[in-house]
Image (cartoon, rainbow, N blue to C red; front, side, top):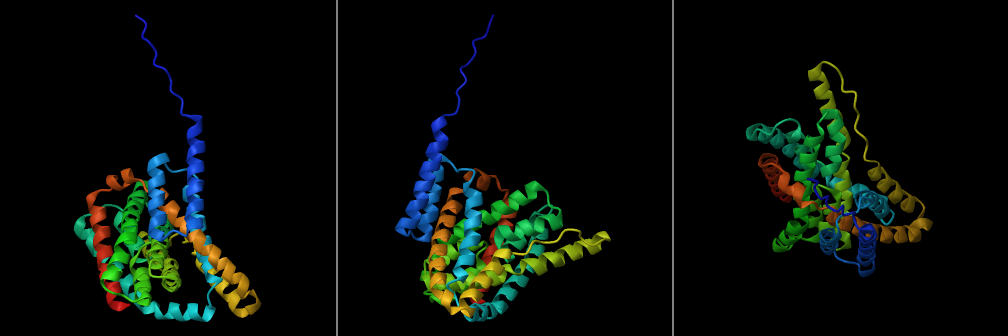
Length: 320
């Protein structure tokens, strides 16, 4: 008896075009309407739920975030940037040291396996996904370990966009205090600028400067981690972390408009465009939300990440 073959349903040729058209239209709306940061993220989540996430959205958002941060420097005075960085050095160092120590202890107590605990700790202590990506080669972490750590940090990073502005207003924090708190307690730069922007442009700029000073810790911490692991293995680590070049670009942009005042009007235009780029980056941040990945995270790494985040948030509020 010959079985009847089922018809093969090919994917609709219109789906990709509709997905691209709707995504680009939403990007344009984010910029044209000047949406608040939370609204930009929410719109990204809604578009992803309707038509899915285009493959180009993630890389585009990552590039726009870095370019936006660099462009933001063109509208700032280098002296103000350095003073803000120095002022935020001690709170950042205290929070970073405490988070690293607590993370090592908690990971052992919770029985978090492999390098997941170290990656989650570094992501919480320094700057989220960037720190995880920089440390993974040095630790020789497996792909699934990196994926779990990124999932934990991504989930908490998304929550920060909602939780921090609400807490900041409930605690009646000033824009300066709130900006510094965001910079030392939120994981990724995208959520730092998104949360700080809800308290005004001055808070956004101060948070960006303080956060970038925190991001610079990637290099010494990962170098130190590689040295320690190399000593234990009997040989120096062959992998070196990649410096956060966008931080240096931010400083270079601020230096150009400070040392050559004639560039200040152009710098103001670049800074304005940078804020639009950051909004679009936040939109792609929401667009990349994958709830299936969030649900797949095991309880222990998530408990570790949540406990560290709570600790650094409380400590950060005390020291800023």
